[in-house]
Length: 325
Image 1 (cartoon, rainbow, N blue to C red):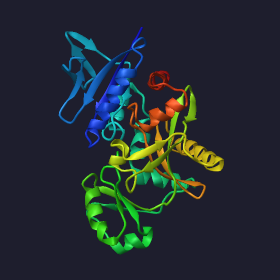
Image 2: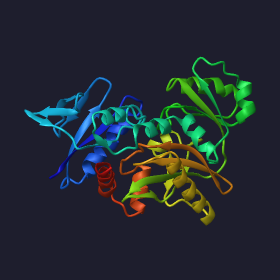
Image 3: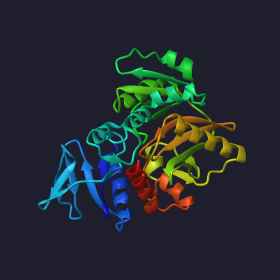
Image 4: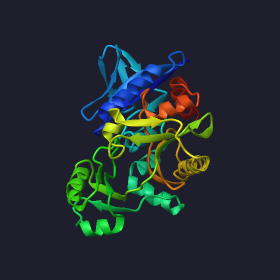
């Protein structure tokens, strides 16, 4: 008997449109011989099941069901395609745990932890994982530009702590740019992270649960036309994404070992895509994305393709892993 799968997409953050694209790709490629796929939009103003004619049916939040033409639809599993809140930060996953509905992501605590950049860095540093030098601020703190520059130097990166798709990130080359960069980051989040600039090759590493094993996918080298891998570089073609990355054997071995270790340190499951920058041959961890882009052109699907894994296999494996968990 085919399983009913709710593909949740949208969300409450600046990434809503990107998430809708990812969710629609999952819907398109999910094996219809094995699954009854349903698109579910999770938006600030409404939770609705959306059919192929764009008719909307409200989700009953008591049990996450919907009534469609007099028939009650319930789900066996949720495929999480929400970038940002409330999918990637774990909020809605805690709700699914409460109503005992399985989902394709890691447990809600792991999702909340990895969505918080500075908390993630604090954990991995304790295990000896190399990272950039960093300093943290909350909205309302007294921010000393001298203190920042003395600690992280210039250039540096100013980032919202809880945000994705490079929204609110700035590269600061001189002190006069720092105040506006901090203001920009605080528009996305009430917590910010300021990191030292690492000058080296940047790579993106996908690590997933695949057929009951932790699998490191072929590595992607990021070559941005812009100052860094910003929104334009990610989504508007202003970068080269080279898979497999042009790394030495030693660099490749080091980043595979580190990426797998970070995945296990953070008790991850499901999808992940992490960013690293090499300083000499040593990969320095930047951050982890636990609901990475899932369109045909996104990095993780490109990596899966290089590994001989189709989108149908990639998405189906996530569902089967969740159902068997």
